[in-house]
Length: 226
Image (tube, rainbow, N blue to C red; front, top):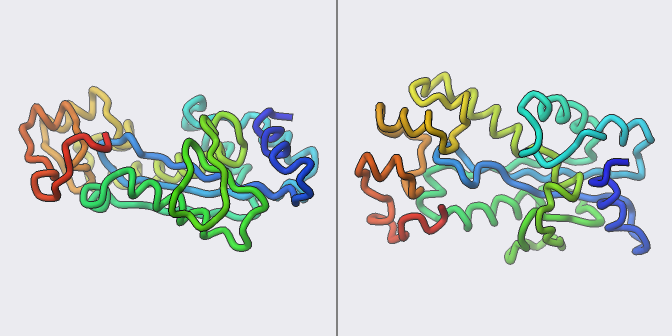
């Protein structure tokens, strides 16, 4: 069995809990453009057969998988998930309210959307101070827990950015999906920024363009969340 599933099952072992484990993770936290996407996935392992574990044996931290492999795995995850939830926060909201605030809210909202709540809820990285759903933070959770490493947030965000490329073709979003790459920096220098860009992000490309930081209007120190 993949060690990520073994971790989830260990979380409920010996506690008298139903083997129903949810994981929450985000994608797009470090991007220059596009939304933040948080997702929660609940696996009810009591309903699984060996074939289900075998089908997802290749599941891993999304950063260790290519785009094509993530798409293949998600196609196997969706029919096996007891519940799925996706929450987004737009660039304008990130600029106005701060990346960390938006991230915490989105993760909490994704967990709250799981009804009934899972026996165990795990969150990648840190605890959500305002979340009403009991949960446990798992450092490096996307490389330890199958529910956290469910890649739903990553694939959803990638698909969205590729779709938005049709409206903003100059910036090459279908290639870098909004992250800071040399090609993205070059496109910003050539075309400026568009509605998808986060103006509060302390980017070298933005500095070169001498843009006015959103912080001057919102009182947010440049790069606070970057």
